[in-house]
Image 1 (cartoon, helix red, strand yellow):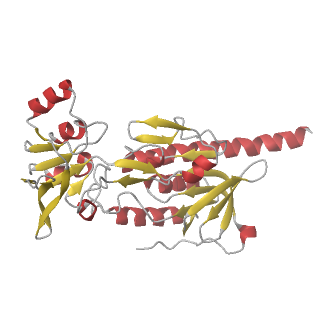
Image 2 (tube, rainbow, N blue to C red):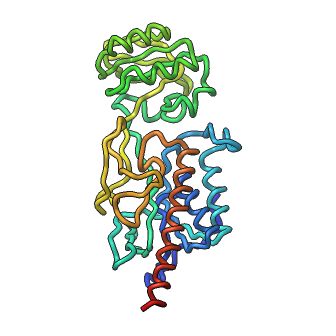
Image 3 (cartoon, rainbow, N blue to C red):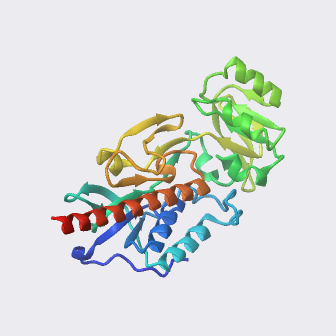
Length: 324
């Protein structure tokens, strides 16, 4: 379902917005909703590559628990369109300062728009371990987040492919949803003595050796195939992914980054403000653990701050003009 919204006009001379939101997921649409209601001329540019696209449903969002991600975004686009927010499909390739205030935003198809402020909510990409059949089952019976999917697969036989940095963490967490958990170390180091004791207390079985692939029968996961030929029966597999933020044009603008347990992300303050004046970021563009509800909250905070900054800048200009 595509929303009935205005597409970006072709005449680049008219491509001027108060705010351009790059990314049309929960964070971006939440920001756009606030800005539209604040009567700001706003454009959302959406590449159409949400992180949760493989998932059939999303959980943990009060009043939207169990809703499909696609339906959630479609409803969100309809809501923001009601306040005059424009929306277009496109991939932003660059943003550059334009004059004393504002930016020119370039799209892959050759279009360009201008904005006084930017809110970047471009998300991230999950990088799966190189294991046969893993990508094909992603979002089905190969999962990442137990808070998103744990209830739906509770009490089944879980497997966990260890994260290379925190090998025991995910296995310990998912033991909340099943008493039958096997941790496959794969290429990760042995757990620390403290974590080994916790794994034993949680009843988690630890299997050494590299995982070669998955056993699948009748389009369902039945086991994990090891490099030595063994197959360990499992019904659900959790994977600690590596993450790669879609922040190329942000870092090209000079946005400062910082190291997190999940990798390097753009650094922001409590409102989402980056180190680049006039640029905010929210959602998974700033961290791997921003769930849908958190991302929406971050977009809201950024939009409120952006609106206030624009208002004060305009008022200060009026004051300066009167007192000259």
